[in-house]
Length: 356
Image 1 (cartoon, rainbow, N blue to C red):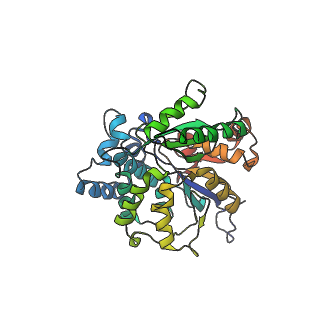
Image 2: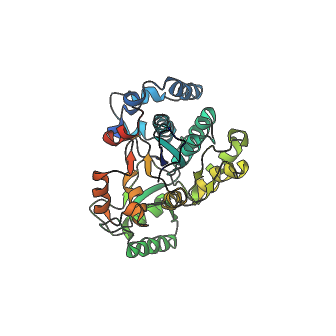
Image 3: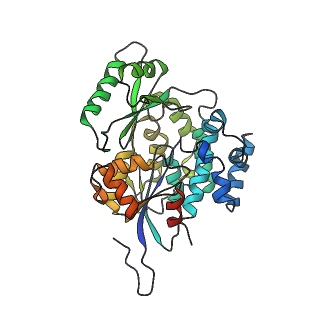
């Protein structure tokens, strides 16, 4: 499907843009901002001017560090602003003569970036919201997260694993002092959030898979769970409705709800963003599936840094047979022949997205 244009105009391809969340700026991405976006002076200086007032490290310094530091680069107050800068700069580089952005969504913290890409937050408001919410646990993490596969080897949802995970959550929550919740539905993975006691028990109850899972996510709090009720309340108290605008393109949130330029209630958008989005399960799988069904994009563009979302997006689409993908091999073969999923964190795919 392509966009109808007047005679003589270029035919544009319709694209869904997806913004990444925490955990996508890793050792391999150190220097991403400088390498790809040394020309985005205004964006970077605006973010760093804001952070300077708070006596926080500049993203320019973080990105240009000699070595990657887990403690420094994954801390919420640093990771959020750094990832936002990289992703927003990538969004600015999309060739709009070739592509028409028909919808935007994101994973977890990527929801805030999606709001900025869609124009629901201007540049000043975006860094205010992202930096504020990213810094909420600066004095100490609230709970944590772990990841566990919910799919078979062909990247299709495995009902037996779903039952296993749900049963483990139910069992652990009956034990004294334990709290665990489904945090994110991430394609073929389940992200689980909880307090320390609950996560430790999950690590025992859930069978070990591939010598890797269940795997703790370093420096991640109990995002998208009731354990963050206080974070939500502080966000609602400190971030006014005046920061939010009507989106310029449709947004799909973590409940699969569509926010359009014509029908968005700005107050409801703010309350979702700082309320349910913080304290309830984020269904990224549903967001992706609703987006492609409703807007029928020709391609999906994933913003950098990194490419940690490539697999989960493919898994979400395999489970509805989108682009004809029925299993992992179909996806891989299709991507080699003519990629429909373009990750800007992948250098070859990036070149297909950029203005030439």
